[in-house]
Image 1 (cartoon, rainbow, N blue to C red):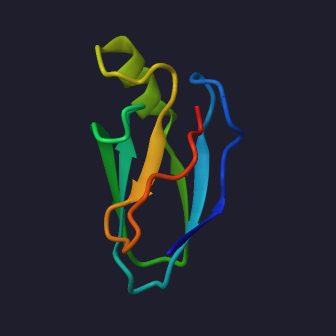
Image 2 (cartoon, rainbow, N blue to C red):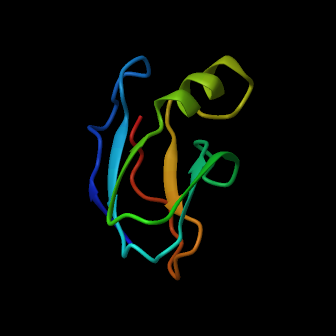
Length: 92
């Protein structure tokens, strides 16, 4: 699995914030959406059965900004089942 397209950094919360991720069709893809502290999981996505996924995570950012989640205006995404399991660049 691999992120093949990132959204622009500081994408607007009220538009789309879309990642494109490629994976083998039989591979289970699990994603964590993280708050700015890079440890607080504010959302999860799970996919299987395709080779390219379009993942819009803008709604997680909108909900986090309405709550007291420590986002400071930025969110991160990581693969739940990846050996390096490091958060990717902020997208917001």
